[in-house]
Length: 329
Image 1: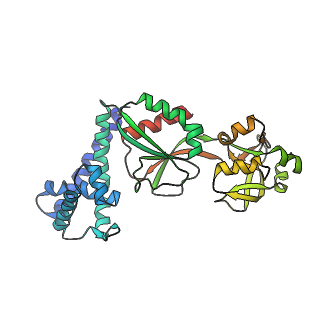
Image 2: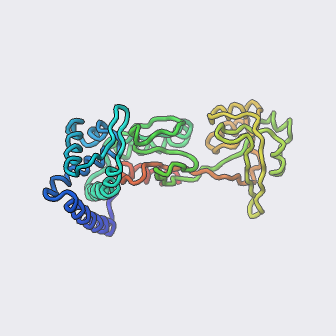
């Protein structure tokens, strides 16, 4: 993947203006020796970004003591403390927050331009650590990720499977792949694909309550809900261009695990609403039957690649996201 000339020209112009602005600002605040002090700013930004001297040192290829010393010198230059330091955590002071807000965009701009220039002649490489839900990885991502690894031999791909929401920055992940809505405003999500949802139930359940013929019939059949959802769940169903119908469903059971939802449904404990890929095998072998197949069920789900806000994407990460968009379309 290479940077387009217009994109590169814009980035360089924006970077040049930002450098002039920051140098003027630092010169006014610090006085002389601007370039020497300016060189310490990216180190400060790395510590603030990662919340740790040790992690910043690892990312920068420096020792922890060298990083700490450079930050202390920057604090001495300014005559203020930039961090609150305790034995358990590191946090920005008001002055540190102010400097981070002014300098972080410039540092990220330098990194982005470097990536663009490198991308004109280099291939994606390095270690790429991603997090994904267990069932999603096994049933949807396995083949695309295998193909990506084959197409990019210079990238060491580390895939960690977990259904919990990981701390991307704190745990050192480059990317997370998730289904659903993005609630954390500190993260950015890029849509990879739609996730078709399906409403299914076991033959024994449908024999007991009768196969629903209209959305209204769902109100009289028990459901198995995901644990994070309320006992009463409101669904919206629509057939073609007809007016949508809203139905309130009642949960007989709930669980925080998709596979357990499938097990409960197979045992006839209730209807479930899950991504189609989760129940394709059960539908094919007759353990579960699709309910109201002519209706589209809302809320819809989408598959996202999630990464920290305000952090430019390295070439290796952009390569994976673009690859998945094409493969999953």
